[in-house]
Image (tube, one colour):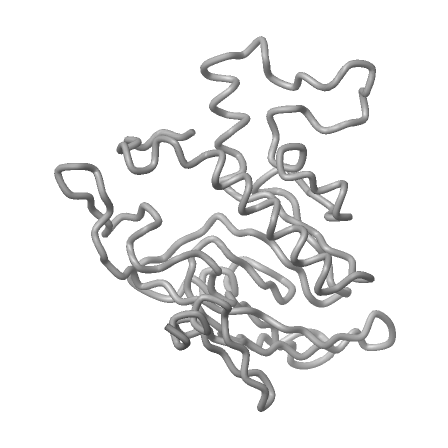
Length: 236
């Protein structure tokens, strides 16, 4: 559901995508049963409501009977059963955000500088530190400005993505063969996770760390993490 050409290999993947995202919500909740889990809507989540408005406007916003406070049936949080897994969904891309504390904000992001550092674009635009996504790349940069009470340093960082980066996901450098099958083609994308330790009072200090993921393998503070797929490949 979008403005791009849908080749046969992608045409019937919507249900599989919903199923995988639902499983991901369940996996996150199982791994962290007491955590607050927030899902910020991005440009991909916005494709469904835009598609409905443009092609079936009368169906936009339809809900189950007599449940005015529920999610619309044709929406990501409803289809992925986020309420069942205690996942808070925040729509409204690109306006929605999460303030970790008074000095650090998380956004999906809507800026891309393909030939340079997107982090510096945010440093020039933001007054507080920001963690952003959207670009599928690992970046981190800092900027110090003079203020009335002394220097002030802010950070802009992207932890990377969890999407496949081998051409299976449509991208600007990707391509398909004459049967519509995606070719192996690696974008300038990196997989990774961001970890933040922070204060929610006092000086609201925080510390940001990134854990890059290389082909299903990563290390954080001396501990190895290996994906189930990589483990299966090693066994076979």
